[in-house]
Image 1 (cartoon, rainbow, N blue to C red):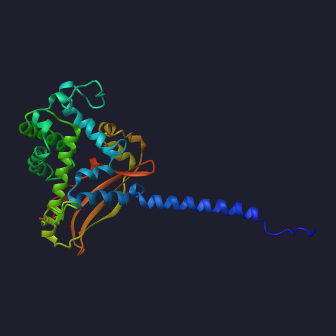
Image 2 (cartoon, helix red, strand yellow):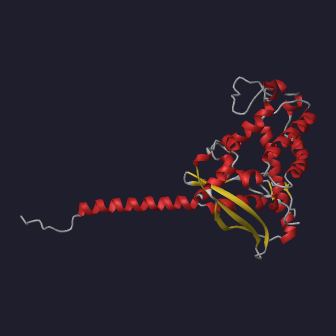
Image 3 (tube, helix red, strand yellow):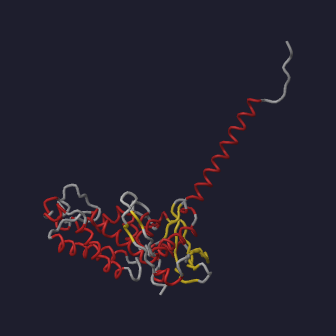
Length: 305
């Protein structure tokens, strides 16, 4: 029998290769994850916040990458502090309390015949009537979201009660009206195209020229870039922060380990700066969030005029 020669150890090589490939895959996944999710990149968080506002005037959804959304879903925060106080106002609801045993205006006993039989046309009328009020509320932006939510939902109750003849109200009704107005406002800026139903071929929307198109042409392009990075002294930042407000977000100020500021410039495709806003971002864990209480986004609305 031939004597085995000492040489290449295939088993050992396989083990080494296995761990090398595994390590490489971990790194690939890690860097892919970091590049895919902007939360790891403070300058991208700042520019994304501004970009969401600029592209469609949507200060409402911009909050999804801010401190207000850090510890709970943004929609749940709105329910707790602005929707449930309306629906359960006669039941004495307070933010943070349970609604399980409370009777609110979402109970079927508050529904009029109009509410029971509406095919969507009356709800559409409510949404249409709310639009001008929404535009007036956000003409200077969403920075004071407390006023926007409070006044909008109060007005919505009044308009709906007049049209439906009852006090019936649900979170779905409130979100639908608000988000429809947000979307319509965005289209007033961007313009719309002719659109047809895929099944019936019936035209469901018509081409319109948006405010951005009027100002910059139909092929306009707005680009946001974060520049001028500055580190903010953490002790000074924490000293000036509103701890009570942060508590409502579920944010412990001691968990904030870094803060930076950026000037986010908005440029039209020709390179001209048409608007800019100073944005503060803070780091909690390994993610960055916009400090929505330290931003003045009013310059991002109406700059096209």
